[in-house]
Length: 525
Image (cartoon, rainbow, N blue to C red; front, side, top):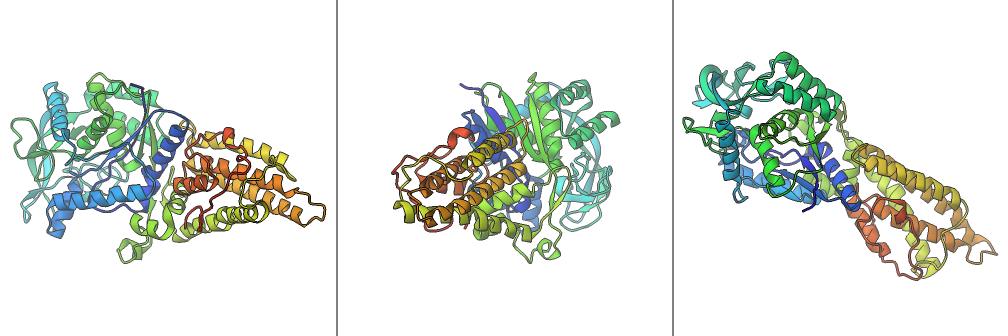
């Protein structure tokens, strides 16, 4: 069995639909890398799951007066559909409540870690809501983060990504009834991280973490690695398989880490390389908890991290829910996957928060319509009028073709660099693709005047052949970013879809092959 390149994306909690921030975070970017590597012939395993047992699912159910399994199942189906419509193709999506053997597998892992002393019992203060008669953990409790003072749920602050123990929150209150919480002593199961200080420090030093994630990990080491609660007295989730904790459920962060390992499978050799795509607010699970689980089992897995910041929605109308222009389903219906994918890659928040602007999404559609589709429409019309809809029997040429060809060869090398895992930069990939289209569009405009010369003598055909060669190459070069339009273009040219992003794709079409352009736009709609 071949050793795969393993790519993961954070499992989303199934308490709501996907919005544009999710797509701008890990999912589309991870899919771009996956598609590029597959086209290169690399074996890839692209996996995620759905966090069906997240505490936020239970909170959503309590607020709506529904059963948590109903909430989870409904939103899991919606999320899966949005991934498919976005062109995000996972090899494996773990479904905690459907996948055979999942619950037993997680329980066995938990039980084994407890038997080995990695998981141990501790008694600490935990917020409690007296009116609801419920322990408050995770999304059940809201307060201020003890580290950065941002509004935070229990367990993890999504602003600074540092863990808290629930009882550490400043002014905690119940997320359901808003009553101030009362601290009570509660015995739970924890993973003490301090015994892993040296191994984690060495692991992080060798990993090459992004700067903000490196600062988080180094601060955790400097401040003293905390104990991380991995069980809670709760009604929703996987039961704790340890005697003495009959009403406890396994923590969602622990389960998310275990979910990645379940998704990879026990029957494969260790991956040659692993890249985790996640938002910074979820980085603790990937960069701390997952390595601890692996290291405790004697597994040293090379892992890399592609971390994004938040894609912020500041418009009050949108935040309040009166405007639905941020939900993946609505945006995909209005703009299509090509437009939405290229926009979120351009706006992807790296190193700092990015604010969503609806007008920039409109600009992405305008770019495709006025440049990409306009050039292709002119090209197909010219082939129909001047070559009877057939690929010309002429070698690529025309005024400026030699210079354009050299620029295209340099551009595809830059494009490979932008797509590659070592220098991954999908925003630059979009910019390079736009520049390629502008160059060939200008070339087409310049050479279109050949038909007006009294001595034309078929001088216009080499330019058509050249543009068709670029269009064929573009169906390969643009596919990681916009697979729907790229495959539509490949079908129109009778070219094979999914070819490598290389200069080998820049070849003329077989003379006489009949083109089959669609009646509508190639990219977007």
